[in-house]
Amino acid sequence: MSDPVLLTIILNYKTADMTLRSVEAARKAMEGIAGEIIVVDNDSQDGSFEAISKRVQEQNWDQDSRVRTIQSGHNGGFGAGNNVGIRAGLSDGTRPDYVYILNSDAFPATDAVRILMEHLETTPEAGFAGSYIFGDDDEPHLTSFRFPSVASEFESSINFGPVTRLFKNRIVPIPIPTETRPVDWLAGASLMMRQDVLDEIGLFDETFFLYFEETDLCLRAARAGYRTDYVRTSAVMHIGSVTTGMKSWNRVPTYWFDSRLHYFVKNHGAIYAACATCVHLTGGFLHWLRCLITRRQSGVPPHFLRTLAWHDLSAFMRAPWRKRSSDQQTRPVIGE
Image 1 (cartoon, one colour):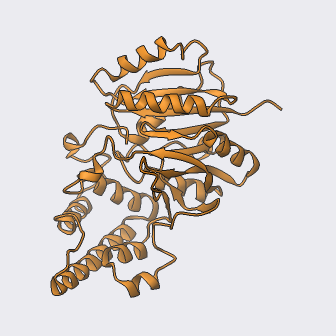
Image 2 (cartoon, one colour):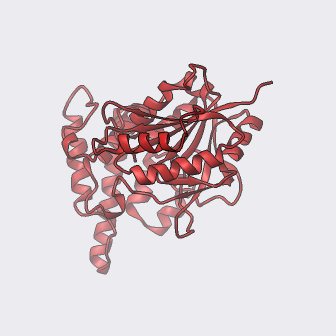
């Protein structure tokens, strides 16, 4: 039996130096593993593609066909950019056994990639496998989750202890596992996928510009009978939010609301999506009222509830469902 072949995809958007660091880490982690690395420049238009291509040539990383750089042609977001790399495939036209998505600001330990591949090789019921993620300060990052639901929308918005205890098995974030275990979905900073599963369920839904695309993909895999496993022994350092600027958001951007609504409508129907929004607004109002009475900070981004209500009401008043927000010009064109 031949060794499994891996295609690693790193999506770049205006972070050439960071991306090259990620490529170096991925190259070391892929030593002894058959396969290649594709860097997809997500229409940076800032010289990133040229800078990365030049470095790849200078280091002779392209001589053994291990690393190549391609352009997406346009920026359709995180899922669309990764799809460009998946569709490009291996340089000789053969089909990989596994596809590994690695963020441009993520750096796998030398054994991290091999551990994910060995897990999938020995766990046929698992379609996807993701790593333990930690920051440059060694603090663990929460990347393990349950699928969103009406119950989880109410629990997260009301932020009230008795409700949280009542819906403890519906809370979206799963405490960071201490050992390998199945979860509903994983963040895509370091995620390995069987090519066979992607062939069966399809690639990332490109309607999602950013956020919920991994959730949707893992849900499709689960509905097809494949697990998503959190592999605790595969360790990857991730800086996080380098291109999105999420840590400094003053207001939640429109594309997040677009993605949330599309996820619920696509996977559960318009009525369910409307219920999810209504219970979120109800819980959020009760949380705001309790904070007003107790003079506590709510911790909710400014105008979040108002924006959610107007966004979803406007969407429900229109047909057909939009594939892209009319506010796209305000979106950061990014690779996550």
